Amino acid sequence: MARAWAAVAVLCLAQVVAYVDRGILALVIDPVRADLGIGDVQIAVLQGFAFAVFYVSVGLPLGHLADRVNRRMLLAAGIVVWSAATIGCGLSRGFGDMFVGRLFIGVGEAVLGPCAVGIIAEMFLPERRGRPMALYVLGSMVAYGVGSTLCGMILQAVPAGFFAGWPVVDGLAAWRVAFVVLGACGLPVALLLWLVGDGSRSATLKAQAAPTGPIWPALAARAGVLVPLYLSAALFALGAAAITGWSAAMLTRQMGIAATAVGKELGLFQIAWALIGAGLAALIVDRVAARYGTAGKVTLAGIVALATLPSALAYAMPGPLGAMVLAAQVMGASALYGTTMLSVISEIVPAQSRGLAVAFYAFVMTMIGGSLGPLAVAGLTARVFSGPAATGQSIATVAALALGGCLIAALIAARSISRMKAPA
Image (tube, rainbow, N blue to C red; front, side, top):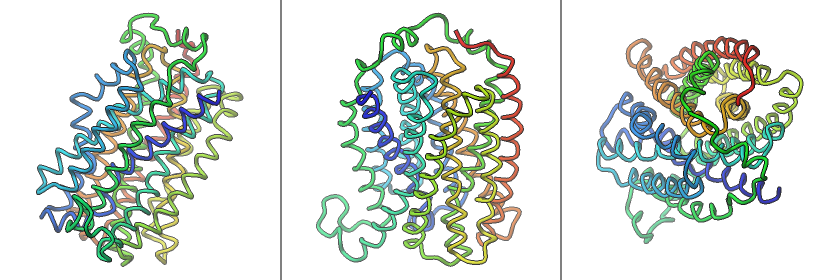
């Protein structure tokens, strides 16, 4: 059991690395715009659509592959690729270079989720997966805060000459140094994956994980559950991405806070909220399952979506401190939501199709949510509201519609699950 928890800790660290690399851009939007000569819509494309392109081409095949090869080695390769791509983003000369780099960072989402959830599912029995899933999801939630804090520190350190004489980064703009340094931090994590061994799982879990039949018919038989479940996930991601992708810009544009201060202070609040959310997930997800079953967990996810709405109203706070606290609240909600949904998916699909099911979960979260959320905010800001000074109003509009829809879809999925037989 100690080896299993060590594996979960490494997977949590991999989550931190992946989401730090993915989230850097949201913290340096205006410097990147000025340096590369691009606008808000192009920034939104870089934030989300570049990841979606990767999923369309290879994300689902990689999820299918994760059900059939050594997950540890596949994940290690993914970390190397997305870390190198993050470094490449820092060295990009224009929009095209940055787009390609962001596309390859998407391998983190394509490989990490299917591999990690498959490993956890094979090491822990269904009734004990809530806590390890919570720890794993915590990595992605804490990552935004860690990334914000580290990025803010780097943005302050570069003008002070801290990186003078360093190879590669000497003389680069501060935002470029942030990409290169934080990207390089991912490479050692690939080595730690040697701690994640396949031999620690029990004979019972090995038997449960063994292929038992065709994958696609098994998933098609659960379409009545999976369609509203994935729709709920996509809408939650849309609302959350609208908040996380533009809150830092809103704080600088509407609250007048310096980018360096936003990075450090918002990051601390994000970490705090992520810890609260993960702690709640560890306490209540398994208890909800024990009392109300899998359908109860999906209902919980819908309620969490509703509880995320205050984070979209950060712009309405009278002062910057309250705005940062409220903007960071989405991290706590996302930790609880993600833990719940991944636990549900690991239970309602057959063991031989978990990797593909999780890959599709990541696909809809990014293709629909992660890409359309930032784009919708940028579009409303440019075409409906009065420009960059109304970024907060755009965030609130997009998030309210998406999170309300997420609740409705979750309730439909819960009703369908209550009528579904256990997976074979």
